[in-house]
Image (cartoon, rainbow, N blue to C red):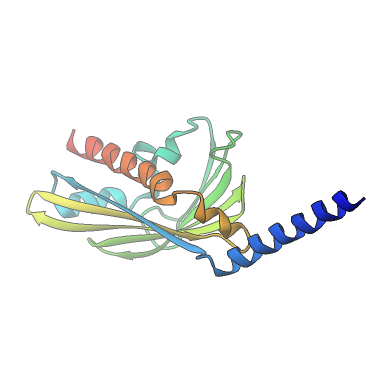
Length: 179
């Protein structure tokens, strides 16, 4: 009986320590990757502002070619929504909405993940002319994890996990546009 009490007290102390640690751990994270594409800035921007084009370069869009997709609005304009639903647990269900466009400069969107987990993220792509025929594209992904699950940020390298996918997507984008 005494051992059981010690085990229970130990579990309570560990859980309390984890909850306290989660209370002081950051909740937000931002991941950024860039690539230089050998095409004029406007040509690059005119391609990336369309959500449907992500099917040709985004790792996440390519994970399940059989996923069901639905579109609402006019692609390439604020308010356009691209929804997806997949049986693949890595893809799940969600929607991406264009929230802002600075013509020729930046494309902003909000991503609502529904399954396999609920969450919101912001993504943006910014184009910068390096030369008249070279464009730097910077893709940024920002999200947060709610308390107490934010404690996982201490053990997960989101920069690597998300960053690898962003980097691969940008490499794919470069191949598509430089054909």
